[in-house]
Image (cartoon, rainbow, N blue to C red):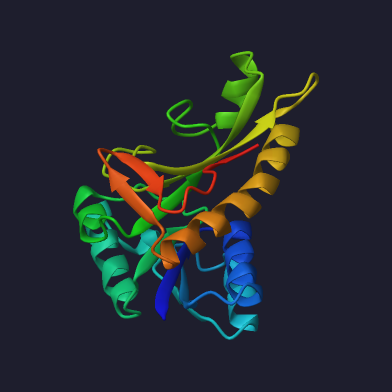
Length: 208
């Protein structure tokens, strides 16, 4: 059985979706811990209520990113993770940290990467006149919001959309896409070939 550690900074709604899918679908995995950089992250209460171990590494208690990442790594490794899942974790991680978890750390980003890396993705998609937006699950590399793409979900950008309405539509798809991608990883169904992620059984990696 594989150990999953989930990193959050707030509510962690994607973490909730993964926890629920792991339980209801009977994954060969367990959520070993939920870890946050914010002591008041509401997702911690959700995890504790379900008997999942939690931990906090407050980034404000560290003078540098390197110091924070070293402390975070020590806590995470105490749970012996097979897979590290970033679910709304709002910290930029150092190359050394990323290297330590290379090939076993994933993230979901609220855009169709490589478009709109960074913040304010929904606002930028609307301002650019995009007719479609979406979310991307990808392996984490040292370059922010890059790394081999595991799966994507597409939603329409509707006339009159605001940043908030588009964000809500994308998030709803993330709650389907991210657990699906994580389960593929748990089941060993993905292979990276020349920076392209292939599903070994040919399941669709695009959710429309």
